[in-house]
Image (cartoon, rainbow, N blue to C red):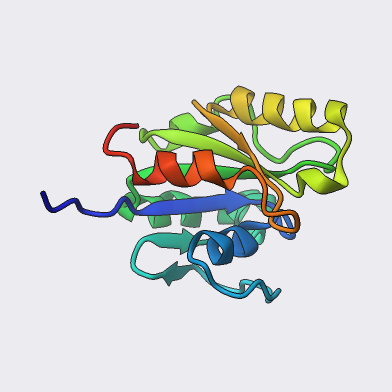
Length: 150
């Protein structure tokens, strides 16, 4: 059976770990670079600049970029105070949405729980907690991304 790979879009603040998440999922070397424009990686991942979320006048670019995606991934850094995602944000896209908490190795349990709550409030169905530094939390995420059902 030939399965078309899901195309996902990663949305989150600058420095939230979107590009590193892409690199980890694609088994690439982890090396930081500032994402300046929307980038399609391996034909299946759309990486977006954090400024598109941080500046309300640029948020329309996220809506347009997400039209090619099958799944929205909201990315929240574990040790970030507060969030840029308004309640119900995922309804903007009318597509399935999950959340990924990144950099869990830098946060305490309460911070991780808060990050999960922010993502749930924004409309993420499932939330995964990861650390690219420690390589933790990716098995469930990768299994979800490769499954045929959402």
